[in-house]
Structures are given as C-alpha cells and as structure tokens.
Image 1 (tube, rainbow, N blue to C red):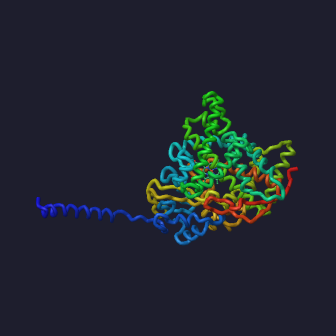
Image 2: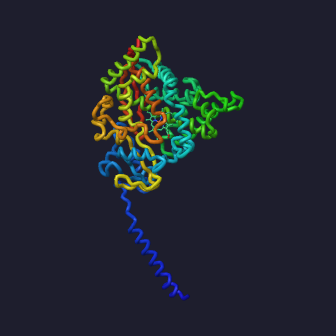
Image 3: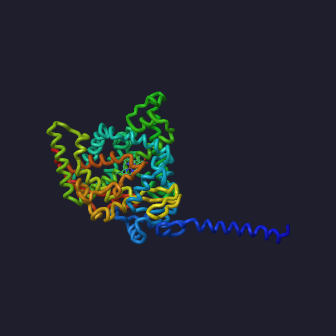
Amino acid sequence: MSELDFIFSVAPAILALLLIWRLFKRKEKPLNLPPGNMGWPFLGETIGYLKPYSAITTGEFMEQHISRFGKIYKSHLFGNQTIVSTDAELNRFILQNDGRLFECSYPSSIGGILGKWSMLVLVGDMHKNMRTISLNFMSSARLRTHLIQDVETHALLILKSWKANTAFSAQDEAKKFTFNFMAKHIMSMEPGKPESEKLRREYITFMKGVVSPPLNFPGTAYRKALKSRSSILKVIEQNMDEKIRKTNGHSDKVEDDDLLGWVLKHSNLTTEQILDLILSMLFAGHETTSISISLAIYFLQGCPEAVQELREEHLGITKAKKQAGESGLNWEDYKQMEFTQCVISETLRLGNVVRFLHRKALKDVRYKGYDIPCGWKVLPVFAAVHLDPLNFDQPQAFNPWRWQKGKTSAPTSNNFMPFGGGPRLCAGSELAKLEMAVFVHHLVLNYNWELAEQDQPLAFPFVEFPKGLPIKVHDQQLTS
Ligand code: HEM
C-alpha cells in the first residue's frame, strides 16, 4: 500500500472516531460544581483557610467565601480539589452516608503521626472493629457504675490543688485533669507518678506536631512530635509487656480493668494495632475535653448570671445528698444537672472545638443541584452552622438558656453537631459531657474566678488559648 492509500484508508476511521467522541462529549452533562475559587497553583487556598482567628467567629476566610459563593463552595485545600460545606443539611448528609458515598480522609500527615491503625483514620471493617472496642470501653453502663466516681476523684484532685489569689493556667489544669483520667482508665497510670508526668509531657510535644505543618526536618514541631510518638509507644509497650509478664505470657488471663488489659484479653489485634489504638484514644480523649472545659471557664467568667444559676443547681444536689447521708456524685445526681447540660451545649456550640472534618467523595454525588465529583475532598464545617444567625439567635452571645426545654427556637440535631454524626459519631461524647459536668459542679461550688490576664480562644483551626487562659480563683466553699 502506498503512503497515499494508507492516509486515505485511515483518515476516515480517525474522522469517524473524532465524531463519535464529540457526540459523547455533547451528551455528557457538564458538571455543575459549586462556585468558588481554586486559589494558587499547588497551594490553593490552604494558607488563608488555616489563618488563625477568634474561635467564637467563623473567621474572615469563611465569612468572605460564604458571602461571595454561598454556603457550599469549591476550593483547593490541603493539596486537593475540595467542596466546603457550611450547609447544615449537607453536613448531615455527608456524615450519614459515611462508607457509602463518602469516607474519612484525613491528610496523610495525621496518619503519619497518629499511626495507620488509629481509629480516626481507619475506614471499613477495621474501623468498625476498633470502634466496637472503644464503645465498649465507654459504655453507658461503665459510665454509670464506675467512671463517674473516678471522674469526680480526678476533678477534685486538680481543683483542690488550686491556690487562691495566685495566677495559673486554667488550660493546663484542665489538660492535667483529662489526661490523668484517661491515662488511668487506659493504662492504670496513677496521676502525679513520674512515669505519668513524663507521658503527659511527651503528649504536649506530640500534640504540637499533630496540628503543625507536616515538615519532617530537624527542629520542626512535626519532627519533635514523631520522636514523642516513639517515646509514647515505648511506654505503652512496656505496660503491655508488664501485663503479659504478670500472667506468665497468657494474654487471655490478663486483668481487663483498663482499656489496654481489655484489648489484650478480648481482642485479636496485633501489637502494632494495639499501640496505635491506645495512643489515639489517649489523644482523642483528652485534648478536646480539656479545651471544652477551658472554654466553659472562659465563657462563664463573662456570664455571672449563668454561674449563679449553676450554683443554685449544684447546691440543690449537694444539699439533697447531705440530707440523704450520701457522699460522692452518682448517676442520678448527674441526671439532675439540667442547666449544666445547657451550659455544656452552649460551650460546644460557641467554642467549636472540632470545627470541621475531613471526608472524600467515593462516588459522584449530586446534592441540591451541585455536583461533588468522585475523589474530591469534602469538608463539613460545623462551626459555620453553629455560628449562623439563621440557626441561632445572636450566635456570638453565650446564652445557655437557649437550650432550655420548651424554647420555641430550640436547636435541632441538624444544626448542632459538635461530636460529628453518623457511623463515626464521637465514641466519647457521653464521657466528655460527664467530665465537663462533674468539673463544673466542683468548680462553681468551690470557687469564684476571674481572668488574671486578657486571653481569648483562637482557632488555628484547632482551638487554644494562646496564653493558656490565666485565671485567679477565690474560695467560695458552698459545700460546707
Ligand atoms: C468535648 C469533647 C469532644 C469533642 C468535641 C469530640 C469530637 C469528636 C468528633 C467531631 C469526632 C468525629 C471525627 C470524624 O468523624 O472524623 C470524634 C471522634 C472520636 N472521638 Fe471524640 N470528641 C470529644 C471527646 C472525646 C472523648 C472524651 C473521647 C474518649 C476517648 C473521644 C473519642 C473519640 C473517638 C474514639 C472518635 C473516633 C470515632 C470513630 O471514628 O468511630 N472523644 N470526636
């Protein structure tokens, strides 16, 4: 065949293919992505998104984007094409469809530091398996029977150590409380003992790395946190070996009086999986709750009416107990803390400890006329819903009374999701509320407090008080 013959015979075939391709293209509906801005090449808009701002606001980035593009917008964040949702219904839809249309997708740096077997990053059956273990550990039966007493013991240990008229960091104290409690229940570590204190210090370095840019160079917070991770894992492994050694190597005979013992005895997880589970439970269980307690202390110092109402509620409970000859809080007492629950909800709404979650679309999803393409990251942002004036009247005001039963504008489950939702709903939500309530109980009965120095919660986007929330307390002694 001559060259000319070849061209004449192949050209019509190529032309036909091009026509078919064009026809298909025409039939394919163009994607209707939400409006938005993809920012700079590679960096996208991540720097603007992560710029620190006052935690009781949605921040300039979010405000500007919502007013320009609406509640659902596209962006480029954390290295991915992303749909940001500040829409209460879409947020719920995303979480309810976890595992079907969406799945958990934290930046790889988080997996690097928490471990590949951490519950926060696992998906599928392994996640279900780990979740069952942690729910069992924090079951409501355990909360009622013995966790409540231990929460009280640990709260009193901290509160009784406070010295009147001396400034100290309330944030550090709250961290000590929640860390000591978790370390006790996870690995039977006693508060104040050198090994517990060492572990607590390692966790402070570890935490700084979890929330810092994942730059693995000498001297960076991330590198230091990876080092702390190794030290923490060593402590957990030593505890594990000690437990097994006590039973001459029979893990089925290990005492299941803490989470580590329970996992060794009742699960078939590998050592690596156990280490990551324990490390991430200690992480998930103490940071969020301690910041929530710090936020409650901060909001309450600006709202004396709420402190007064809390005092009446808690004084009522202690008086009734005294009359009945009882001491120590029990589940019935906890159930009577109705106004306290309003204070907790309001603290979580306004403070937004967990402001958004990381998900990705497993399939092409169409929602409210918009397309969310398969593989795109999806960020449900609760903070924007919690601070939306359409959902909450005067959203920036600390108003625990808005949560009282019978209020016409009572918040719905759609627009209040501090603990996430769906199959990954926070496994420790009930424990967190219990810790907050018991701490507040003894705080209002024992002390008046004031800020020793101006400080305010900032979102980095993780929430923290830059100065550690310095406070001074004055004895109140309403319990005597
Ligand atoms: C006020 C305190 C707390 C807040 C605001 C909070 C918030 C959250 C949120 C929003 C999630 C969902 C993460 C996601 O879907 O990607 C979560 C998950 C989780 N939380 Fe909490 N949490 C708190 C306290 C606790 C405590 C005390 C524990 C106890 C160990 C705990 C253990 C967990 C665990 C294990 C998960 C993973 C659940 C799963 O993937 O199935 N949290 N938390």
